[in-house]
Image 1: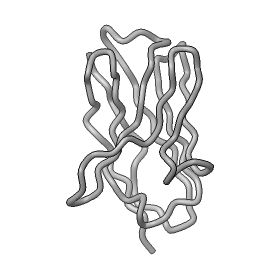
Image 2 (image 1 turned 90 degrees about the horizontal axis):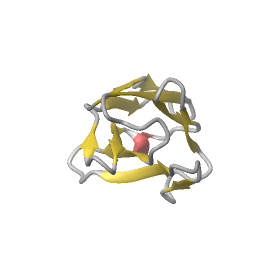
Image 3 (image 1 turned 180 degrees about the vertical axis):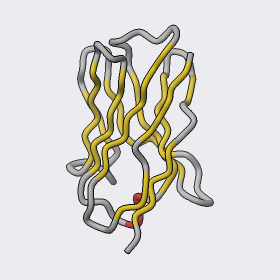
Length: 112
């Protein structure tokens, strides 16, 4: 199983980014997936989830600003992030709960 995250980078406060996570191996195209993040010196925290049925859930800190989605045919998970703030600076990881597997992470830095 491989989860390849991409799309991170440096963005100014108020900006947007879209993260992608391409899955390969024994990942079902419709299984539940999630995004986590880890800020410097902080524990890893849950950001958003999407169930096998497509229902979504978000941490309070990102609700209304982030959107989790997926493209089934490409087995790719997305995290669209709007109105970013410096508090969103972190390494973002995609996660497959059924297999307890994290991707390698992509760094998002929000700074002016």
